[in-house]
Length: 206
Image 1 (cartoon, rainbow, N blue to C red):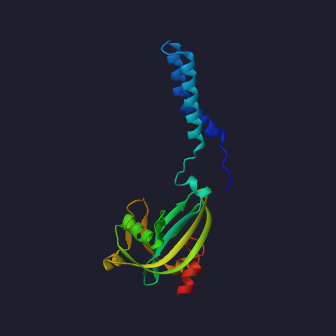
Image 2: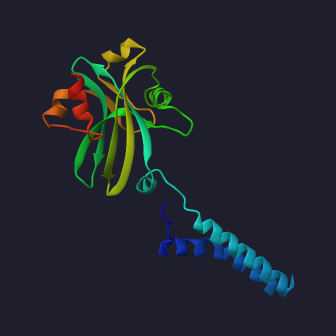
Image 3: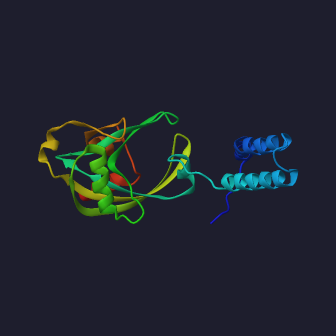
């Protein structure tokens, strides 16, 4: 593991957040309410707490991708020669891409259970998880930010067969829409499919 250094921006943020209580303590001292020794001790404690908080880096859903590997589970649902994917957009690359539905595996959760949970959250749909087709390592950039994923790819099918009649399905926790796209469009390069290596995995299964 590599130590993470605190950037100058973080120092400025830390100072801006924690200077207020320190200034407040000093102001109370100036008013004559408490002794100078007690006030200086309290100010030192507040400053030390501020430094500890500053040293604790906060993760966010995008920036943290650059410093950690994210395990995900993806479900490959087929409708004849089509697969169910959602459309994404990277404006920095000027690229529209597609990816099977699924998401992150939480701590203590196996990948199959994670996939079922993700489909409940995204489509309010139950699925049956079939065999694992493979595991793909995906190192990428998205909107200029680095990412690293380990993707468990499973065959899957809807419990409710009526869902196969729907050409599009709104994803509940995202502005994207799930849709059926012919595998041929990915194989001939007219559309981009992620994660990397998934096209080869699909071709080997046909």
